[in-house]
Image 1 (cartoon, rainbow, N blue to C red):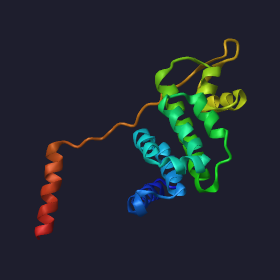
Image 2 (image 1 turned 60 degrees about the horizontal axis):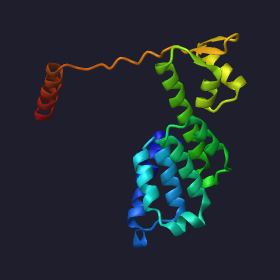
Image 3 (image 1 turned 90 degrees about the horizontal axis):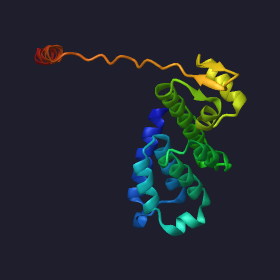
Image 4 (image 1 turned 135 degrees about the vertical axis):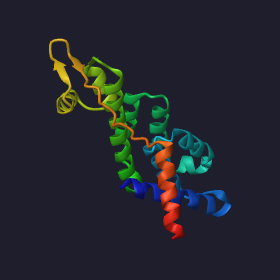
Length: 186
């Protein structure tokens, strides 16, 4: 799913929830909305959504509980538990794509965290934080250009340099605004 599609989908799902009869949406709406909040790392909205889902819908639709177990693990910043919860279920097709995207984005955030926070880290810890087996983890580390010492089982991540943010000065912004206004007036 493209990010624009997800943003449109979340707006549509929120609208469906608000406009539903008695303020209670379908389980499918709740499941998709909850999984999208996890994808967006919007854990506060995910938690509030979980609290407002009626108990009878939670009990009659176990996939909601499974999605929330991923959310709880993310809330606690417990990467191994997150991957365990993600892989413990064959997700229904209504949320399967979103949950696979959740797994990919969580792994990407973990890799970014490792590259920014560690100068050296054990391969076991990298494996736990990325949810990859040792072999896949080692290959992924090598693809990133990270150095690995097999004797000590230590990985040396390469810090990613953030892209510089180009800021225009206030004078430049004022000039552009003035130029735009004069264009509109003429």
